[in-house]
Length: 406
Image (cartoon, rainbow, N blue to C red; front, top):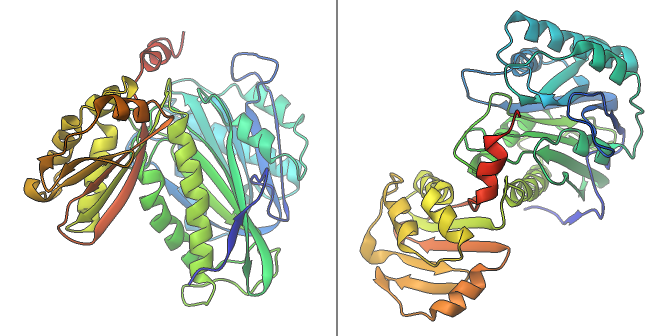
């Protein structure tokens, strides 16, 4: 049973003890007074580290390198990340530049390059301007208050940074877990398009850390969709430095449930913020499917509805055209008995046992004008349940993506 978990006011990735971060503007993104585009996260102690990555067969050399280094089982000390340029589809030079970036971060922090991971995000098909990155690394100041700057440095079309942290007890010790994320467009599972970095001062056994991250990613990041497109650089990393001094959390330890729940809460919060800040979005969409024949059906149904362009357009127009929700469910490959379905829009029952329920249209339209629109479906076929997150489809999305590189 999970213990008490509390969100930390103003929490970020450097809320956990032993982590420092910093960022600078190196010139990889178009200039603005408040822009940052290059950052480093560093731990004073070695970290057991887990990761999940894009499933695309076209991927950044940074993804390839990170997977190789994690496979070696060497504790990590930090990561370097840039925004503005994805370092993807640039041939062998991309891998060479990724290696150099880890070397630059290692030299700055006094560790070996093999203890540093690298991530990039931005335009595909452009080589990294390494002269700017070499210069930029020298201007990064690392401190315990730098988490928010790092959250800003990884933004591309995001309109705001995403960061959070929680605190809880493990083995009688107060520990912290904090994270940041970026992503606004080109987001669709599996893995949802994003960078997300999570740090904890808890001691966590490596195998348990990896299995827990994979499990949590499936119910959070992999249930997020903005526009049906996936990316080449998707990376989620969790680093655990053990500075809190607790006995290492393992699959069989009494604290396993508490750590898992803490990670789930942080990832869920970041997932919701990513969906809320989808390119051009005016509404967060939440799709809850319960009573499915199994979990797979519930996930397929929820994701298909959340990613439907017709559903997304209806939410943008605050149009309670609920038939689009049922149509998406029907093509989701989930087992469905139409005569058993209940459907709710922001708590108002629209369909019960497969039959439409008369409702006051203007009242539902008013409810759909709220920043968050929730569709809940009860299938009455089993115990499977899942939640997916997305956003509406607006004219602004088309404008942003019609001129992304110009």
